[in-house]
Length: 392
Image (cartoon, rainbow, N blue to C red):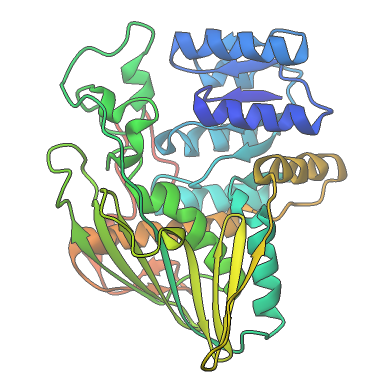
């Protein structure tokens, strides 16, 4: 196997694969020399052999012995390595979101459908035993018809230095930015912190919230919303981030409305245990689920909640499913098409937020209906010399 993107979560994925077993990492790639050295050293300590190290993903993909790759880069570097790996005939485990923009995602889905390769996208919450149990409960009709869903992740975002400065000597900032705009470097948009920068991570909903939006879609057996509208802004973290620190989104799905909320500053929670999770309001009761716990609140006066703990190693389980799929040649759960629906759902929310308009998604044309401004935001122009893969 190979690893493209050797930062925090890339190494989480590597350790998950080695925990599952039956793999060897023979090549790693990163645009930061320090990441390369550190990851190669860690992998050597874990598996006994040192992988070859490359700065350019195209050089890694040329390694003849490769059978599969993990792509764990920031989102601006998802589409091009993904498509190149398919062309090379490699199986792919890629972190979420599927793509930075909707048109990239459509190109990736089309390429994957033409390919015979195995692809798993990193929506690990589908492996949460609590979320699986909650889904079974809903799918069996025990909650009755679900009439409304509310999803949220509130947390206090830690800020890094926002002073414009030279990047670390080990980091090729131009290559890190790649096809995205090359912004002046500061630590608050670099390694790890890129998540709340519009040009790279596109905000909390796209970065972290996408996990629970995906889980909500899966529980409800939904595809994409019919309409999306959003409101919010940067109220506390002005001049520090470029995506909303407060956001509310209304997704109108076929079966019911789903509301997303987040707050990225330190207001006290009314019930801290509900700060991160999904609430489903059904005809027969209410269900709340988070990563390792789910709670049923039956209808009726005096009904007592029933709390169920269910812990699981979602990262290793998701990786195990991918590796088993590679060996059996049966596609795993989180296909590019499934990943596209969750990714595009949250990307539409950010477009609706930017335009302050309700968007209507046309499932037949795979486009925003009757809104040229929104359609233009479905594709970001690439910085030269990189070329956007969408040709529609």
